[in-house]
Image (cartoon, rainbow, N blue to C red; front, side, top):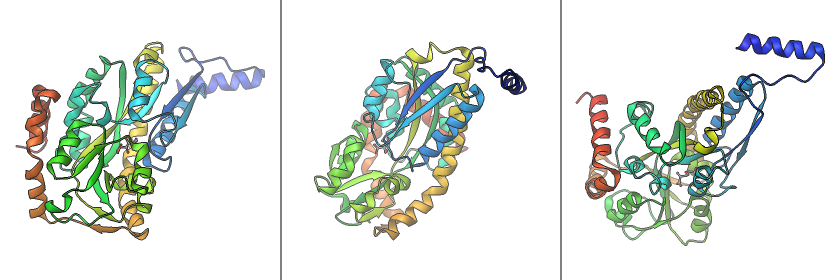
Length: 335
Ligand code: TF8
């Protein structure tokens, strides 16, 4: 394919005519949106995806990226995909549980123990199973990217023990599992779209929010938050979703390019995310945030306080879904 492409290009240049489109590849403009800033590792993933598309289509595709919720929040953009008015979104799974309840499995507190475990689940059979479910809702999941382990920031006090959560006004994603988790911890939790969080923190409408270090850094939450505590209470993935109504109009070759390039983007995005995590943790401390880790016994008390969330949401997520997840995790852990 590559040699052919080069030949075509050379012939076109020699002949001085416009290059004919590659068979099965049309000229396309693809819009992708996201809620984070371009400096977030999602920016690197999108850039890698764009380079891959340019190479594979010989420049017939343009990938137009919109940042910082410019096209609406995760859920709004995802609905635009379902109705076929936007091609692509890189979104957290969490605000989409109303569309696909099985996604709630990723919101269960303290589910994954490390990033390798998350990768194995997401890139394996379980990830495929969830992707198949999404197709029922008009969404093609091209790949799972990394959002990461989430940590609490606030402007009241460091979280060193369970009681420190008490009464804190915490923003959570629009998701009942997160809401219950933070209620179980004793906070006053409010669901809110990500795009509203900075202002809500700045005006002190809320005290706290939770996100991975790279988001706290690239969204400049250090300007409006004083404490960062390594709660690591959940690992939520990003999904690279494509509109099924639009996907179905693409040729097989084009569909393959989309899937392949999303995976190329994934590998870049995950590695940048992991490299940047420590850098970001450092940055936010330099910017004035006080950082603390929690001791093991306190983390165990926190885990115990939120354990009931699994039971409470088992039915809405799907008992079969949770069983499958737990079986896959047991396999990975050699249990
Ligand atoms: C959240 C998420 C977000 C991302 C972003 C909007 O807290 O972690 O940071 O979904 O793309 O809402």
